Length: 103
Image (tube, rainbow, N blue to C red; front, side, top):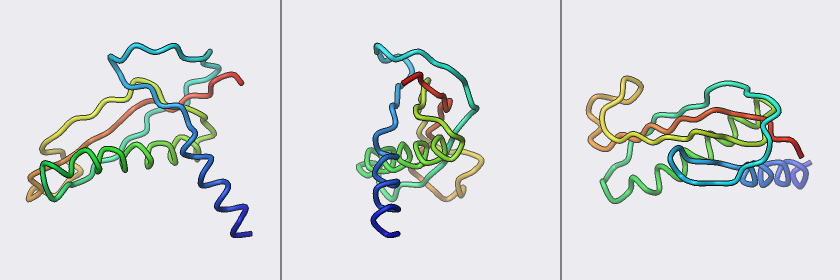
């Protein structure tokens, strides 16, 4: 069971992610499933890159839970956000749209 769960978890990392404003050739979208988003706090400005990377993993998991195999129109905002504690100096908000790409 653990091996199967581990395999399923690693499949999440294979989800296609396309950031807004970045040129890309993506597959055909069969269905748009909805918005995926996460707001996180970094303890330092230097750490915001790692926090963004973690946020993208969380978006992949959300898309997977919705039945999607990709995320499009991903944007990242830095700074205060309503879902982050007001004392967080280095907020990171990542959002996009979960989709199903044709295989």
